Image (cartoon, rainbow, N blue to C red; front, side, top):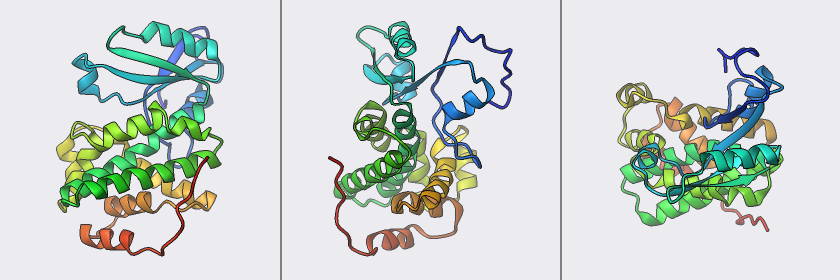
Amino acid sequence: CENLKKSDIKPEQILVNASKGIELPSLMRMSEVIKDVLPEQKLAILSGPTLAKEVLQGKPTAACVASEDMTTAEFVQHALNVPGKFRLYTNNDVIGVELGGSLKNVIAIASGFAHAMNLGDNCAGTLLTRGMAEIVRVSIRLGANPSTLYGLSGMGDLIATCSSPMSRNYTVGSMLGKGKKIDDILRELGSVAEGVKTSKAICELAKKLDIDVPVSNAIYEAVYTDITPQELLDKLMNRKLKEEERYV
């Protein structure tokens, strides 16, 4: 949004944002950043299990269009829907849709990390579940509807990005798990992996809110410190035992 000006987009037009992340150092969601620059702009958020290569190949998927104005969401839903290939659902929970799409990228890094260490399918299931607990924990505190996080922009996107080598964040995690350094990884990747910066943002946000996010903290350490993969695993698995939280 740094290069946007109020004259760039007319208020009657709809801006559809598909980027996922939390701005540093403001800790604002993308819609908040856009509104800060273009306060009168009609805005919708597109998020869901939409790995780019599969979308380009025309493989079927579904995603969520969120807007505070349901008329805007419904217009985008019908405009971008592709029968048989790209199905869209509307939602007015902008906070939940954005946070689900942003925070799952950090968990996708963790998933790739675990896969590279050959930790098994049980560990993969554990990471998805405990990662989702962190996403829900933070999102609810910020005003999201918990049911949103179990929809397309939360659980749906989480499953896709945590299980596919086509996910850039999964790939970053896999390379971290092999002991590579983040600067070398990003240079080799040659594209943006939103979870790298989001790992820092979520840890700062969680600290501000006094919320426990051990998986995200682990990925932050993997990205920004010299901790080894085995040290990181030991640190996660040997935490103090606790009760499993429930969101009903």
